[in-house]
Image 1 (spheres, helix red, strand yellow):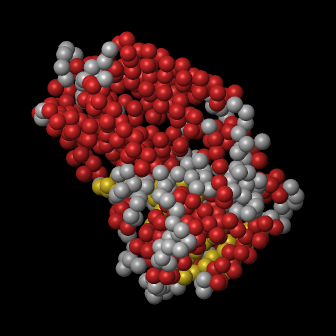
Image 2 (image 1 turned 30 degrees about the horizontal axis):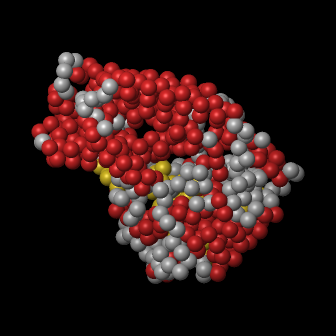
Length: 558
């Protein structure tokens, strides 16, 4: 057992880092200083807004709108509302929710302005939609965004007048086609004086709030975010993945203009997306705190900036366990890749025995292709397929699907252990990093940094002895494993019900770190581990498939 002590210590640290990185902060109480964001204060508005389902055109929607107008006026803001028609496609979607004629339904946007010292300067617009889908009170989506914005602006007022106007834009008819946002950005004169936009959304009821989308040419925007936000969460990988998905938010029409833009949201507790159970009581207040605190930091920086960020080359950026943001341009990305490649080549040369590099290659192939095939196959066994009902039911099953994916990865690690134990270096990782750096450079960090850190650890552990060698292995190995666990969790939450096989690649990136932490293995130990893990994964797949439809499924999907 002693020979596995390095692995055990590294795994414990890695799990702690990953949990910290993916856990929202504690909610701040209502008696917090006026200049700070308080989730408890935001919840007072969220409870009113999400008291019942309130789709566009409903009496409940009108009640929410009246409440928002009164709230903005009570804050001393300049308040306006704008009306507009909804299109036929939106009306058809709405008709099943209202169970009546939607021919005369109009949307109503609500706008409040906190005047800045320079009324001619480009304004900062904070946006969230106040309508819900039919059958859901919509506490996360998007009462949490509306309540957060109200509390953010209250805190900014307490700090004194900002340099720029802050526009609070609460859109209507988002859930039936972004209609309110499209109307504003296409025809409202106020849109012409906007310089920066922050949109708040949710696809779930908890988890960390992440920056998952920015405007194009985001170099300046990403740098400001990195400098301004005290506990950040987000990455250029998230922005790249989101752009590849067929999803839209109210920020979509805003991105057709030349604004600096940010999109924030949380996707934990995924079963609560559009759910009848999406009540204020089930909303994670820590996620509201996370959303509001990041938005307050960023809004204050934008609203008080002498000049808004300029568009420049897209930057790689990512948070390091929620502590700070690493951000750099393409040239630095190439330099880091070169260093990582050199370190990985050195590690491959250190491998003992014949064909060490070939065994490392075989281990990576086993995890990527074997693990990917099993993840794909057991995902089908668990009930993956088309249709709204399946979609919402599988959102509720994501925690179980994550456990299933973890068991499959453990099985592949165990099955390939004789190939990677005691060996470091990854040819596959270097080639993958090179391909990403060429074709999608803002995503390459998720490969480059594990290669870089495991390479440093491999070289140090080879050249150092005793306690220093163990320290290098455990410390840097834990950072690599924690980093990849964090992103594996985020990918499973984002695309796990449809494409869990993507985590097989992240699992393969763990092999250089695992190889230096595990000096050797015995077949009689690891092969039973692989077998038991696969059996448990199959049991979970059948459990998910045979389990009754979740009570959180959206009403209109049933």
